[in-house]
Image 1 (cartoon, helix red, strand yellow):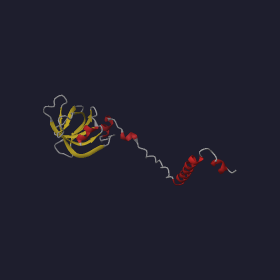
Image 2: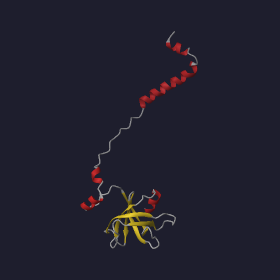
Image 3: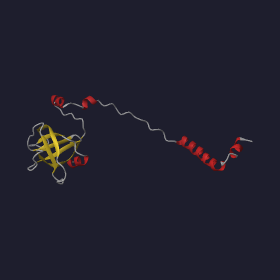
Image 4: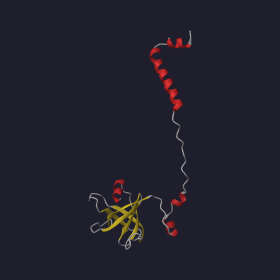
Length: 166
């Protein structure tokens, strides 16, 4: 008696044998035509030292270095006020924004270290004011007569609130 005849004499061979044959055929075809494994390409090395400068180093070098990507867009008009008195806010506009803060254009100079509150002009009253700390202030080259104020979030607001600033 041959091997095939012995396999056919096993209990319930007529049930499991067709399934086993199917798996062998499909497995063989897949193994022959399987897609190649994706190659993992290492990204180029980034010099971390040049992207992360402390505030003192930035002032010494005299040029701007930042470690967060900034998005520019259409200027968004904002109300600016002291955090404790928002009854008579001033007006400014957001020049660009990042995950860490905003760059504002305002009509008067602000002292470094000052905490201000901002609120989009066209946002509902239910939208909370966002507290920012002034990190830099210089006369604007893009908007004569105004000042560019670099601000950092005191407490980072939710992303949904950040989107209101452009």
